[in-house]
Every structure is written in structure tokens, then in C-alpha cells.
Length: 101
Image (tube, rainbow, N blue to C red):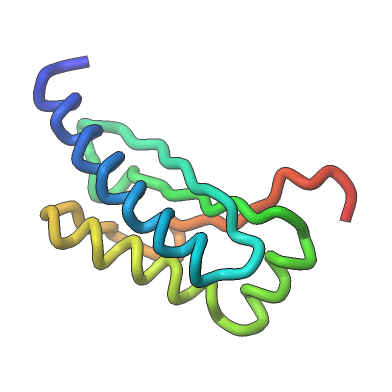
């Protein structure tokens, strides 16, 4: 990993950690998030996955459009650091690690 990649990763990590902590207080059932990125093309390849505690919590968040707000919050926070998601709806995923639902 190049020094510039480490700097980008650190920025993404800090921003998304702040977003995560805020969302845990605001969205029932939301637990954590993670991301993947290709440093050669950050704006098009950065994906954020928001994890919920259950399928029921995820369905509820989708039904009340909380997931849209969550994606927007993450995109706006990243944009403040000059990281612009090219297509927010395709770069933000919502999932659960619940095995049965």
C-alpha cells in the first residue's frame, strides 16, 4: 500500500467511524459498517456496507426510508473530505449477518 493510499484509507476510516457512531444512536437495529475501495479509483469503487442486527430491523429501516438517509449522511460526510461517491445508491449496501430471517 502506497503512502497516499494509507492517507486516503485513514480519512475514509475516520469519516465512516464518525458516521457509524451517529447512526447507531439514530437508527434502530443498525450496528456497524464497513467499506471496500480500490485506491486507483476511489470515487467509483468505494462501497459502504451498513449492517443491521436483524432482517426485521433492516426491513423497518428500508420501509421508513432510513436507509436513504444513512447513505446520504455517509456520502455527505465523505464529500466534505473530497471523496465523492459516483453513485450513492449503487455504492451503499444494507445487510444483516442474521442467518435466518
